[in-house]
Image (cartoon, rainbow, N blue to C red; front, side):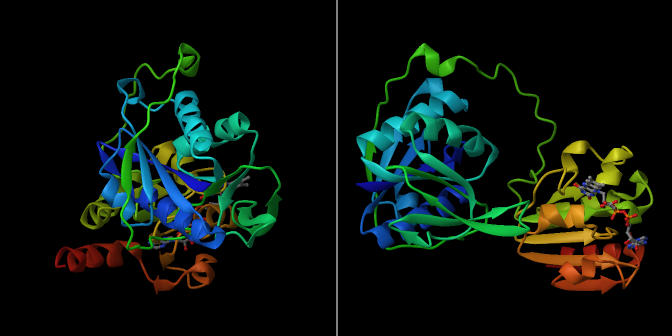
Length: 317
Ligand code: FAD
């Protein structure tokens, strides 16, 4: 019996979300009196996962898995779950994990709940709280299948260090051509900048910036902070910024630690996408802008005066 957790890595190092899902799996395992087994595909050093609660790391080393393939990765995870007699399988809500989680659930004939926001309300029966309607409400769902698959929302649990050490074990799943019925043949990376999904900090701007020629100070702030840039929907609709930067109900969700909104009114459709961000800072000339009600910190003032001054101060850190 175990709680199995899928850990994502990039260039041989575990991503922060991998450490977060392991921390979360550890909390579930403790409440169920069982252990945590992590699955690492061509990933980093097992001891990193041990520091966050993994008891065992199944290391899968296979050149065919160098590029992410949802079918193949889901098959690897399902085989590991069977080998480990897993009761619960935990994944993140990254784009890749969201793609593979339903495939894992089908393979294991398991119930799947995405966007989980905390440790299970109870483990017998197994009930988890998860966000619905773009984070406007929460729902508690019971999973009654023998194996349960849960997708942990980004930043929903945080990192919790643990004293344990993980034993690394090689795991060789059986993969067939059927596992690779679709494959990505080329990727054109639009940018090397921090992506909105991975960003700890997001600097976002709206129509208050008046035009695309004024984004230099936004880019500068993002560069100083190591942040991703984002924007409101009208800004991308008008072609001031690429569509990939549009956040909100109809755009990308943002679950960063810090979200800085500059010249954005805070319409409900925009707020729907950024609710999961931890600290929200708003800069707006209008003290009645709805965004101030959702903000942790607010500056009433002209972005064209405040942002350059802030950038100078931030550079000094
Ligand atoms: P505005 O509403 O024009 O606000 C600009 C703000 O800038 C104002 O608050 C103003 O006071 C401030 N400002 C002006 N000058 C300055 C200055 N010099 N310094 C500082 N502040 C200044 N929107 C999204 O963003 N994401 C979505 O996913 C989304 N989905 C939608 C889905 C539907 C079905 C619909 C109907 C709408 C959707 N919208 C979405 C649009 C949304 O309703 C708003 O129209 C939009 O978010 C407004 O964008 P904005 O805040 O940039 O612009």
